[in-house]
Amino acid sequence: MNSSETLGRIRIVLSRTSHPGNIGAAARAMQTMGLRRLCLVSPQRYPHQDAISMAAGATDVLDHATIHDSLPQALAGTALVIGLTARPRQLSHALVPVRVAAAQAVEVALAQQEVALLFGTEMCGLSNEELDQCQLLAAIPTDEAYSSLNLAAAVQVLTYELRMAAIGDIKPEAAAFPLASHDEVEGFYGHLEQTLVEIDYLDPAVPRRLMQRLRRLFSRARLEKEEINVLRGILKMVLRQVRRP
Image (cartoon, rainbow, N blue to C red):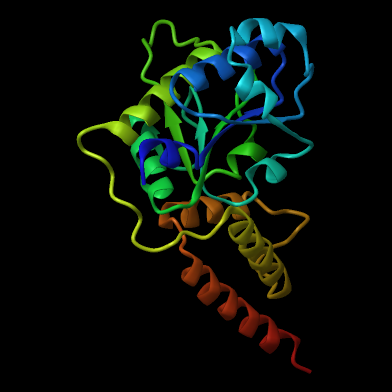
């Protein structure tokens, strides 16, 4: 698989972007690095002339950008979702440098599976609900004295690292076994939550972040398709025993 095919399996997802100019500038950053797939989740103002102006000719990316009403819709079909964050979170997934994240993204793309790089709003970044949709978090190692980075600048850094991972002398190896898709993993989490409620381990009225902790645990495992099937088979048998008269 050449670098264009590899990068073609990686989508950039911008969630709830406030300024249309940032969408255009992000599209420009993407096109300079050979990425074309832009997904927009509930942008506040788009389409917009400012986006076209800031794209500086990268209209091919804007013309093919997809707009989604929800984040799960934008992430459908992906096997790895990497969230970009500027700060550590108290209860979250593993946080790695962007270079490590880019190598992992290319590794999954080489196995002909889909990857998403997720960016939050300009002011607040990713919400806790959006973090729950990720399997990995990445941070750009900015100066501690001034870590504020424009959204489009962050996209430029990430797309550069992705391109270098895809065309570099030392390329990541393709993942040995196919990872479970985002849809399959979310289906498992729903099945797990249902089971925990029915066996009285989880009280929906007082969840106490249990599902967040379990998401964190399983995200570290990078679940494969077959592993999801095994886990859901176990849950199915547990529910069968619980529901038996």
